[in-house]
Amino acid sequence: PNVIYDVMHVKSFYTGRHEVLEEKSRMNCPTLREAGYAANLDLDPYVNGSQFFPNHILCNSNQGTTENNYFTVKVDFMLFARNEVYAHNISKSIDLLSEKVEKQSLYQVGVDIVDVSHNPKKMWNWILHCTDDRLAGYDYVWFIDGDLEIRSLNWQAFWQQVKSMRPKITQPSIIGNGKELMGTVHNILRFKPDSRLMAAETPMIEVQSPLLEVKTWLGYRRFLENDPEPMDLIEQGGENCMDMAWCHWAKNNMNGTQEVGRIDKTQIAYQEWHPSLSLAEDSNSGAKGRSCVVLYQTPIRHITKSTINTAGRFEIVSKLLCRYFRLKEGVTGKGAMNNPHEIFTAPKI
Image (tube, rainbow, N blue to C red; front, top):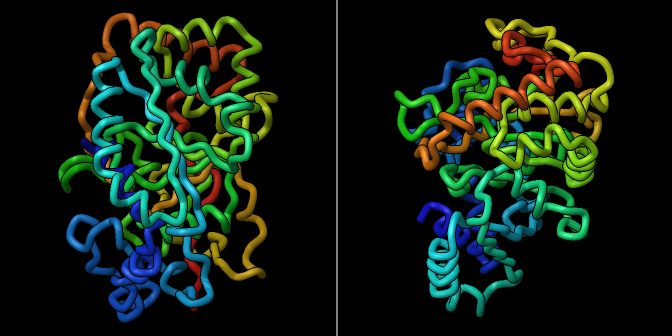
C-alpha cells in the first residue's frame, strides 16, 4: 500500500494542486523566521510534519518567483514487484485510483511495473533494467525502497537544494517511523535538528534512497558491468559497500584509495567556518557539483519494515562484494564512512 499511496501522491502534483502544495510546503516558515537563525527551534518533523518541514533556504525564497517543483519536476515510476501476484495487484489498484485523476492531469505519470520474481535482488534489477535506452531523456534516476514514504518529504524544499547544489548523488536525511526509531544505522545520514545544518558532502549514500544523475548512474553501471566478479556477487544479492563505492567513483572515478572525510563524525555540528548554501546566483560555487551529498533539513520517513531475510547466502555474498571494493578499488573501510568531507550551512539573511 505504501508504494501505491506514493504513486498517487505524486500524480496529484499535476492535477492543479501544485500551487496549494507549494504554499503548504512553507506553512511552518513563520515559526522558523520568528525563532531566528541560531535559535534552538521547537520544530519536530514528527510533530510539525516532515512533508511541510521548513528550512532557511526554502523560507527565504519568494513563492511567486521560485520554481514550483511540484509541477516542474516530472516523475515516472518503474516499480519492481517480487512476483506476478504483487505486480497484478499493484497495477489494478493504481489503475482504479487513477481513473478520475488522469482526466484532469496536466502530465501523465508513467508507471511501469516489472515482475522480478525470476531474481528479486534489488541492486541486480537496478543494473538490469535501468539502462542507457530506458533512461534516455531523464536527468535523474531515484532508487527508493518500498518502505520509504515519498509523501513524507517536503518535495519543494528537497528539489530546491538538489538544483542549487547539483550533486552527482544525493539523498534526503532519514527519520524512523517514530522518535525512538533511527531509520538508518548511519548517523551521518540522519536528520539533524540544528536548522543551520543544511547538507554535507559524505563518503557514502545509502542504497535505500539514492538520487543519481543519470550520467553518473550509467557511468557507474558500465564500470560494474566491465568486471564479472562484482556482477556475479550482485546477481546473488550482494549490496554491501555499494553505498561507498559509487561515491568513490563519482568523486575520482575509482582512482587511488577513497578519500577519508576530513571532519570527524563527532563534529557534525554548526561552525562559523562552514561554507553556506544559498539559492542566490552568487552563492558559494564550491557547493556545486559535489559527488555525494545528504540534505539534512528535508527528512524522509523510513517505515523500517523488513521484507527479506538478509542472513545466510545474502550476507556472505555482500561481505565478498565489500571485500572486492576494498581490496581492488580502494574503497575506504567501515571506520571512516561517517566522516563528512564538508558541511554546508544556511546563509544568514
